[in-house]
Amino acid sequence: MDQTSQTFWGSWKERIAALQNMPPLISIVWNSGPRVVLAATMGRVLGALVPLAMLGVSKRILDALQSHYGGEPLPANFWYLVAAEGGLAVCGSLIGRTTAFFDGLLADRFTRHVSILVMKHASQLDLASYEDPLFYDKLERARVQGADRVAMVHALGTMVQQTVVAASLAAGIIWFSPWLLVALVLAVVPAFLGESHFAFQGYSLNIRQTPIRRQLDYLRTLGASKESAKELKLFDLGGFLADDYLKLSNGLYDENLALSQRRLRTGAFLSLLSTGAYYGAYAYVIHRTVTGSLSWGSLQFLAGALAGASSNIQSIFSVLSNIADQSLFLTDLVDFLRVKPRIASKPNALPAPRPIQDGFVFDGVSFSYPGAERLILDRLNLRIEPGERIALIGENGQGKTTIVKLLTRLYDPTAGRILLDGADLRDYSIEDLHRQVGVIFQDFVRYEMTAGQNIAAGRVDEADEPLILYAAQKSRADQVVERLPNGYQQLLGRRFEGGVDLSGGEWQKIALARAYLRDAQILILDEPTAALDACAEYEVFQRFADLTADRMALLISHRFSTVRMADRIVVLADGRIAEQGSHEQLIALGERYAGMFELQAASYR
Image (cartoon, helix red, strand yellow):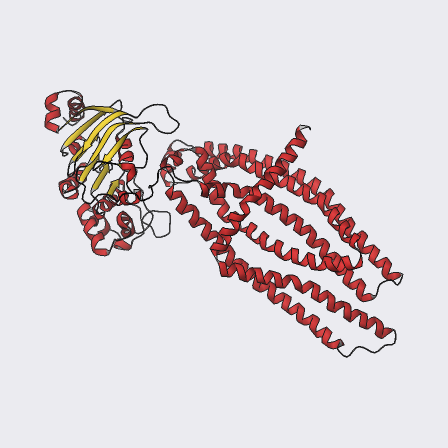
């Protein structure tokens, strides 16, 4: 078997295997709106029976007219038959419009349901997933399929209706001549195989192009965003980015054009077969009528049945091919929804202790990020006691933020264990543990929502106006909000109309308010004052004692004016603790910390 044949049959095997995605899709469709699905399905079945009924009535009308011209009187129910045909036409129109109405509802419900499924599932996956480019490709395709697979939902409904229509019309053709129906079906098969082959090639091309499409999205965003605007103008990068975008997009265009041209040539040839088969059968029926073997009504019935059956059989094969190929695209969505987080709560997991009695213990903890060989932490031993404020310092890449990620179980240690009140951290409920942690990262999220919603994000389940106002006052965010035109109802950011952007320091005060709002036993501040000026930083840390009162606090900062307020300072180097103690103790020690402190202090002298 040559390579072309292997590719062809291999594509069909993959296409057939992808049909296993249909049950999950049908389940998603059903869950998006059971009543709407039932209404749309019933409408399609009823609408599918109308053509056969109309052909049957039309046959009786024409046969009566033929007999009347032969000298016989019209039957007594003749005008009732005419009225019935008109009534069936009206019913068909109403059923079609009603079905379209329910199809539109189902499309909206399906898109919304899939989007929510993807959002919720993505939020449950491991943080490590978001550091894998291949995961991002799959996530991007899963997001797109939430909207693009609406056509497949409609195709499923269309195939049900067309199958009922074809089956009913085929019964009439079989009554006249089974071979006519066989000829129609066989003529459609080559076109079906050809369309399926090129549809599969389109899917394969889409898979190969996904990384490039993500790169195009990045260039499009980079070329028209607030964050990059200053450098684009100063460095004159607009033309460079546009040229890069044009080169990549031209490559995609050429590939898509070549496939479309091959599909056009082959599809046009194969469509001639089905068209020829239909008109051959139609000519045969006319011949039988001319020779007197068939009545006018039978000619009308068979001509309509042949046209309807031919059209619907072709459509069934086409839709079936489309569904088979669309199911290939569903693979990424189904696979994405099947991904389970490796870091999850065990059955009957322990609730987080309230209050924490003994604190955290890092017992010989080593860690390296997935896909990397370098150990960020190397057999680290660290104890954090309740109510203790600890500062982590060290050069970049020494594991400060990694300790935070392990403490909050965004990752699990590569080796060793982390204990909380004597129990392994993996034995606790992750969800309950997170409720006891308040974290403000240096790269905190700037939610383009109202100022009140930005603060409430720290405790969305219980935040009310008095708590929001309290948190804003504690973090000095109230002074920022007072200057906004609409106060706490003011939309922040420039993404939406009417939004007001803030400076870096103002955004950070909003983010700090979330930490005050969260009633957590463990508070983690990762460079909390990085965007604040000296005066604003001083104001924030005048209230640092209030923020951390009766709480276990972990502080990461490069500013020693901040670090020295901690009860204990831990200096990290080479994945281990190089030295630890209070500010005064480490200065007296005169080693690594003292050297860094003097180096920073010298720049202010």
